Image 1: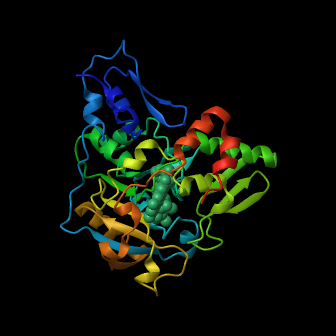
Image 2: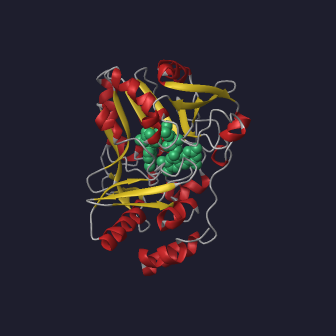
Image 3: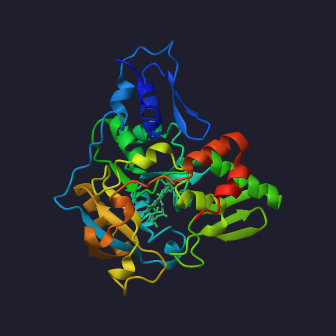
Length: 365
Ligand SMILES: Cc1cc2nc3c(=O)[nH]c(=O)nc-3n(C[C@H](O)[C@H](O)[C@H](O)COP(=O)(O)OP(=O)(O)OC[C@H]3O[C@@H](n4cnc5c(N)ncnc54)[C@H](O)[C@@H]3O)c2cc1C
């Protein structure tokens, strides 16, 4: 039968294998690049093979229920302050508001008290607000699938937002569709290393001699299109254009993404979720009057449940129906390609550490 160890570098880090293991002999452990992979206690493993069955990579990708032609919509939240604090058009807030209003539970990615990006559970608006905004780092799912399943079995309405591979892992461990579970995935460029992010924040803290308390990858003070990072310290703040931040450059240059992001099977319109949310890049070529450089979300409606979700949030948002051709972007037709210096980046990082590679590779265009 064998076990999950054969997945190797193709692993998404989705934790499905850890969750399903009846012997609890799988733990997710960080490798030298900072990504988590399953580590198996061979003495405890009975080779039952369940971990392989639920692995989204080994089980092969099965897409969601497909509309003949998945509906695509340009969405903007009617409230300007919500769009200002969201990465694109505030679609996530509209969807999660609906969920909280009906007494449901929202799962998404937020910072913990140590500025680690991890999936968290929210039942109020203030908890949900911490999940708002894109964190361009792989979110640690920890053991969140256990809580999601508990909520589902307790008949709560549940919204889970994550990368498509996280959604696929969750679906595999649940093994069936639940009426009270709503899945939303993001269009995903690929996820950077949590270890590199940690070391980047540590470097800034050492320079400033202050603790970082928040980090916004999509500060819109310079407009939606101008990718801007703002970092809140205990008593001060810095705002950096993406080109001024080594970490942002390394992300956008595809230098330190999780290895399997470069072969992502979800970079198309066949999504594993009910709704897909992303930035509507190129909106200015389609709906010139709708665009105000304050952020427009692209929402793909993948299932009947997704369609009902959109109907439920209709009063909160302005919408414009679009086509696949009009909303096409790179991550809807092919995975991100690694930067030509990616291998040497990791070699140098292993030998000389973060400060060295940040200076050498963090300015590449
Ligand atoms: C790593 C990453 C890469 C992305 N790449 C693209 C891209 O190439 N093209 C594109 O159109 N859009 C991409 N997006 C999505 C985009 O940045 C916005 O998240 C999306 O437009 C939704 O914006 P919003 O205004 O509706 O919601 P927001 O309020 O910004 O909410 C963002 C949602 O994403 C979730 N989230 C945030 N960070 C993570 C994370 N690290 N892992 C899992 N879930 C997370 C939050 O929980 C929240 O539900 C990416 C997002 C991430 C996190």
